[in-house]
Figure 1 (cartoon, rainbow, N blue to C red):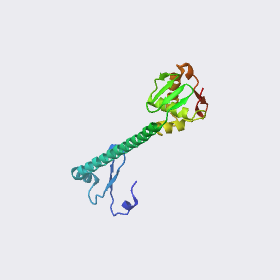
Figure 2: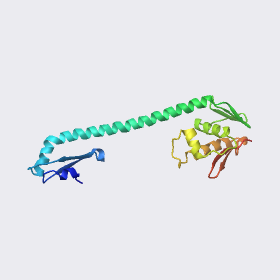
Figure 3: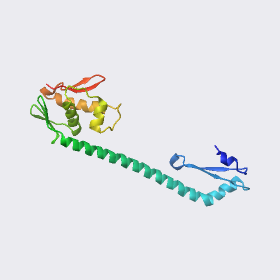
Figure 4: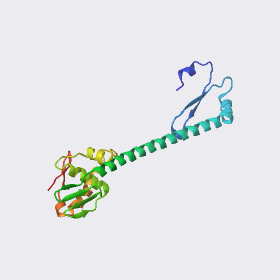
Length: 193
């Protein structure tokens, strides 16, 4: 496609050189040959202008790479800030007891009928969040937001896998069976004994 302003110029020939760093179109350089033949013009371009174009393309690629790195860094920083907020929140949580389950957030430790449960930090956070809201239904989107900081695809099975592992660890203890129930299509619920 030739821009309308080029069609108004008094010349018969036009050479458009696409500028494409890494396959992405960065623009087009238009060359107006005047009386020269396009082949002669391209030969001159190769000798004089092409090094400038190569430098410009390299600059465009460097800029795009720097922009991608800055975006990744920004996402990393946002994740770190959210995690710090969750850590600060977890430090302010109070110990919680539900039936034979005792949760100590200062040590990220859970015990069931006196036996220590070998939970990962995320499993502990999920169990604490559900136990704190015993009898209430908590959906996957809420758990993703509150435990994982909103990171993750709402259609992933991240929450399901974590709850499944948590249940397996709870089910090894007689008092842990059925502590976490599933309400199909609604979410999960902690059921105190």
